[in-house]
Length: 354
Image (cartoon, rainbow, N blue to C red; front, top):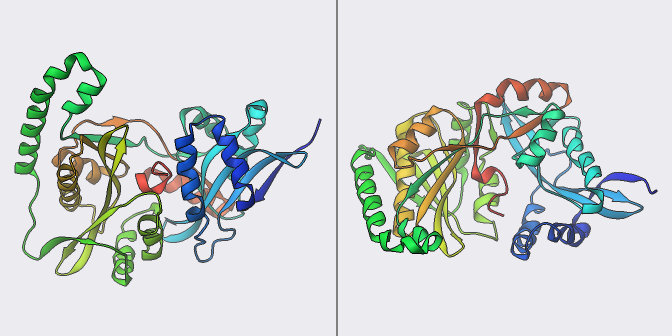
């Protein structure tokens, strides 16, 4: 029997990784990752000890499993720390039992920093066995716009009800427009195309009021939402007397022939439900104008996010997945469990888009 090894590799093993992925996923999912791989490897945050890499499971020199580890930065307890974001753990079916080695390695990727991810149900229990810190369950709230098309597609025999279902949804959205907050004097919402120096000023103010979240510097936001090759995002900022006090990032995706609005990111300087609601309302208007059937707002965060969702028509909550995180080295190992209950985590902080 050959010996199993865990190694760090670069882009030279990407095609082998995609072949492993094909054993469990359809070609569309594989091509989606392939389109994003060079982008994931393009950024190495300042001061990061490794940059992005493949963590591979190998036997006799052959790659039989692998995980992409994206290099990022988190704000943790008042300071920036290097982050390692494992994405897509794939192991050949003949060696699945050995794949636990890859998961265990997530807690030992470096001698400092944070390793964190949003695992599926199967691997979540394994991370718990390895003493990962666990966040609160992610809340996903839904808002409907034209649900009749979904009803007709899923239940063709009930398609005659589509006009009535759409009418009820339109009445609900009319109510939302009555109760949602309005801009006050000095406030404005405007679209931006890139993140510049003024956004770094906003980030410094916002992070001071948060304990645990992925960095939102201008450099990181440009990489994540402007340079991404796989999707087009819209970015709206909330201003007060010209200064940025909040941001929301959204996109409209095609899911099996139906347009779905997605809140990819949202952050405000203050924990104010009204500020978050103003931004969610602006994104909701975009989704309606685009003809979305429904929209999703998935988050881990404080009560302000939940209250803002209710005020803007995201009325159907569901709690499910949880972030697992490891502090690497004694310093971060103490900070992660201390602050994980105060985590601010959005869809754009992991790989659901790609």
